[in-house]
Length: 230
Image 1 (tube, rainbow, N blue to C red):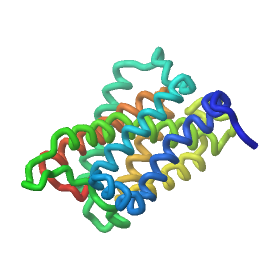
Image 2 (image 1 turned 90 degrees about the vertical axis):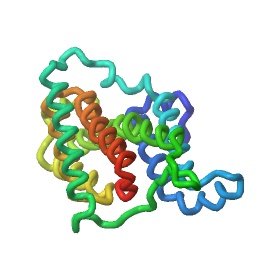
Image 3 (image 1 turned 90 degrees about the horizontal axis):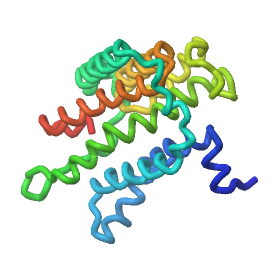
Image 4 (image 1 turned 30 degrees about the horizontal axis):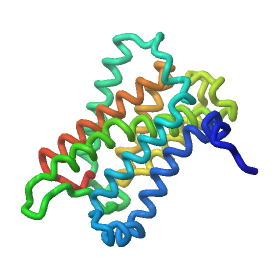
């Protein structure tokens, strides 16, 4: 069965799954793409930046399909404050546990340094923008909007986040955890973002929380040059 571009764009599952799966495909193909990039003069670290740009463009192409992102009427000041506070808390947990025994493996790290050891700021800031702005939108659309609700009801757009069952909550948390090297921190982040979405019933709340976590982590990495977290 084949889909036209308009059918793909209007399919709620594909619109939320394709950006995430594309991102994962780039990660898995990183080692294979490295020689190709080197042959045309692109360093491995630039691949991470290019990956973020491509995913951002795909999200923009699908944007009109993300109906839940156009609804902010029910969001209160309390929702925003809790979202930001939770994002900071997850960041603190991430840097505390990122080097602990709760780490499965360390993937190849992004190091935005020039040959003389100084910071390559254009590359670093583009990477930070991808981490803080693109990844939270991409992941929350996939994990919270789609997977969390789809497990309970395939017509997931009609399911209120507050009606998500315990089984879907646990499965989504577990899958989100194993997506990350620091699985324990990933599990806590997954629990936090799931809970924020179910509590607020608005996807922007976990997106903002996720963005705060990733943004704070990215700034901390650049300040400390602890590339193991990147």
